[in-house]
Length: 230
Ligand SMILES: C[S@@+](CC[C@H](N)C(=O)[O-])C[C@H]1O[C@@H](n2cnc3c(N)ncnc32)[C@H](O)[C@@H]1O
Image 1 (cartoon, rainbow, N blue to C red):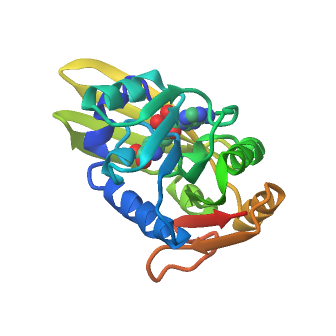
Image 2 (spheres, rainbow, N blue to C red; image 1 turned 90 degrees about the vertical axis):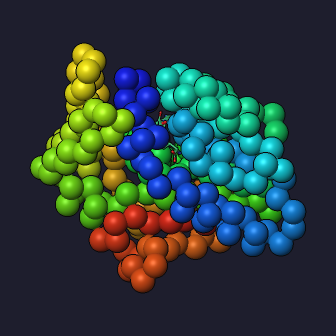
């Protein structure tokens, strides 16, 4: 997962990190004090971390060495740690813990409580956990679809298949002047009701959910954004 695909990632996602970084900065301002630190769960190539204020101390966790390698080559100013976001236990706490661009969907839903516990356990008392997810509606609606784009001189085709039990496999094929690269990335969907319950069980008592501008807050919104505090 995210190995050969890693060097095409930033080109393919062009323009996406900016709104995520802006959202994180806007919500973090609600802490009402100076923000000093952020932990990003599933930081990938560090595209979002790179856009956040230089004054913030940044730590990024990712399971893909290839994605982290790109972040290092770009010189992203953050401590980058190769680890699974379900298991980490760093000996420090952060003002903000973020897990963006449907990273949580990459983890089987039965393990989301572990991710939420990791987030909660790494937050300062008044800290904020920010994450987004692809909804069940979007994942179900995308199944069977295929899309081709040109990125960095290569052709990238992504086809989504329904693997049952709300698992959707994104089959990525990259062709160009190199051997074809084939990767499968699984995404898992959960209902808003189930996610709210898991967050409550993880100790988050104040959870604000948004569907994005003028979008409904339900399982049919394409993406839901969560701002959670304990
Ligand atoms: C869609 S990318 C998002 C990357 C980054 N947050 C961004 O906005 O550009 C998802 C990332 O999550 C990472 N990931 C998926 N499952 C993970 C896990 N269990 N532990 C750590 N990282 C994981 C992948 O390697 C990938 O880099």
